[in-house]
Length: 81
Image 1 (spheres, rainbow, N blue to C red):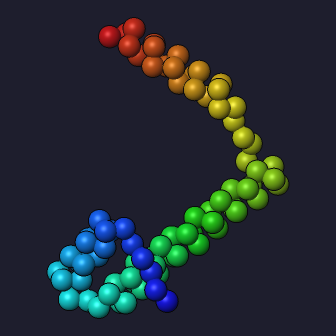
Image 2 (cartoon, one colour):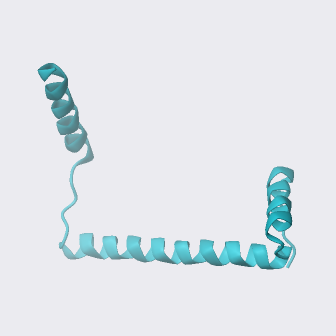
């Protein structure tokens, strides 16, 4: 597989290769393994949250109402000072 990067990213990769002594293939493989693991974890979390909402275990909150309450608390704190 051949991968092309922007010149800036390629320069950073080249610097890491020089500093770590790792081969380009191994460095990119490790980076992709970490990225894929994080992506899988994030997808699972989102799927679990969706299932919680769909089943009714979790009740969504109104975003506007939440931020309005937050603004009111902030105003109260500022007025106390």
